[in-house]
Length: 232
Image 1 (cartoon, rainbow, N blue to C red):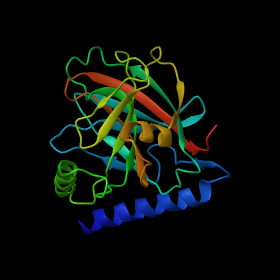
Image 2: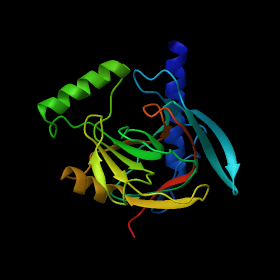
Image 3: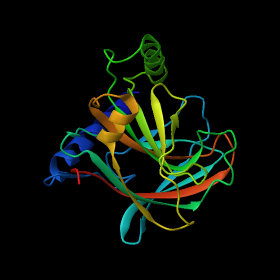
Image 4: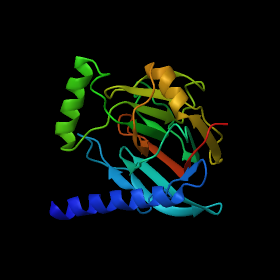
């Protein structure tokens, strides 16, 4: 356990060092997915985990995610001023999409999500209870609200719905032809205001995942070039 704690602390410090040196004007370049600073993100009750491999695609340092009836993610703790860099940008592609999610509304070939700090003053008693349960499950400080930007061929761009987690919002970004890289740019601060009706608290980190555990399918996706930038 001591070794695991040291590894987590080292990853956090590396991420903070990168954040401090990568900011150029109104831009914060995040470490390439899967590189130093990124941590494994596993979900309670899910035994089979998605495989993540660092690759180089089209001259981009990327991570390849391969899910086989599995789910897990990668998480990067960050410390940025979202007021100065409210937009999150990245590139992704799906090589093997999910054929049909059916009722599995939590399965996506690709998703990128932003985690915010928990603010008990803004939370209902039910949200505070859920947050406390999550903290017990993970045995560490759990995040607060989350916005999940998902790759979805079945949900029109801009479709929003509640996720299964406490205070989680899902936002469809649509899809692209199989194997085609696509670049995204989302207004994290603006989306938070629309979804939660208030200014966002501190951003705790970003995460990505490819999951197919509920529908028990195969999915393959790639993620690259994540960065926070200023408003247009």
